[in-house]
Image 1 (cartoon, protein in one colour):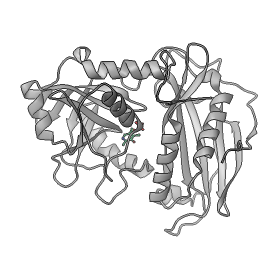
Image 2 (cartoon, protein in one colour):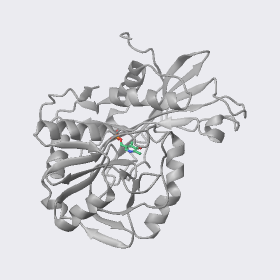
Image 3 (cartoon, helix red, strand yellow):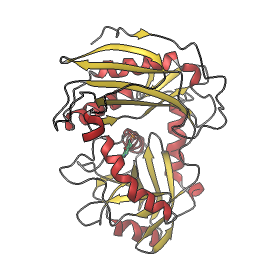
Amino acid sequence: MTETLDISITKTLNSRLEQTDFSNLPFGRTFANHMFVADYADGEWKNFQIVPYGDIVMSPAISAIHYGQSFFEGLKAYKHGDGKVSVFRPYMNAARFNKSAERLCMPDLPEDIFVQSIAALVDVDKDWIPAQANHSLYIRPFMFATDPYLGVQPSKTYKFMVITGPTGPYFSKPLRVKIETEYSRSTEGGFGYAKAAGNYGGAMLPSRKAVEQGYDQLIWTDSKEHLYMEELGAANVMFILDGKLVTPSTRDTILKGITRDTVLNLAREWGYEIEERRVSVAEILEGARNGKLTDAFGAGTAATIAPIGEIEHEGQLYTLIDPSQRVFSNKVLKTLDEIRYGVTPDPYGWNYMV
Ligand SMILES: *Cc1c(COP(=O)(O)O)cnc(C)c1O
């Protein structure tokens, strides 16, 4: 599709921008003035609209509520020093959006519709993109089933929506994490690789227990034996072990992160040896003991690059090297920021200019 999307735009008469405190932006609580909405019916996407952000009315019988036909994406828009605005690698999110849709028997959304709807919405609300360092406009596209029907089968109608909100850093300090050896986030043959709503509901009890035990996050391990690392909460997990960048290879239990892919690209460019493979809990803890583990962090759009400060496994707490001394994660975060905020050129074409 090369033609531009025909979007009807209704702007709000009651902007909330002036009342918003941009010095206090916890993740996910503040929403910009507008939202994007489209409908799927009779086998096609239609009614592309940007309207004032607000509540929506739905049948109580929709299968999104009862059977979880619902999934989302997460990406960010950045304001550059010269006032230009970019969205980071949105076609990657568009492709993953359709992988999630396919797994949940939901309709494909053409990638250009996904990207153009986001670009149009970000443009309408560009004054909501914070200008201060480490801040951005978080973009949340999502799709859900809307048939008013309680049968357990795929809906015939859906909504695609996008909401946005200004946000600062998700984590403010190095993470104290627990290696989860009881619960699982996803299983082989399941849908852990999809950003399906149900994956996050199922993660809430184990996450809450970890928080009650004094941890910020947990590291998911394989559901069969709990011997291999999978992810860090809702971020991918990466290590520098013995000088090499080591990260779990993606499989159907692991969400294939765009930040992960971006970090791997930069590491490859910098000449790091990269190992995408199964990563055992034992080898990482051994590295923490013998000093060969020189970096450990979560990588994700919301989390950005989140250093792991301490790791607990079966009653033993390991303190990792001081995050300020870590070469790789500090360099990768700095480089990523410079590209995303337009401080340095973007030779990879990662910034989609709005
Ligand atoms: C979104 C997400 C990630 C990170 O993906 P990005 O594309 O880098 O934002 C990793 N794991 C899970 C479970 C996620 O939901």
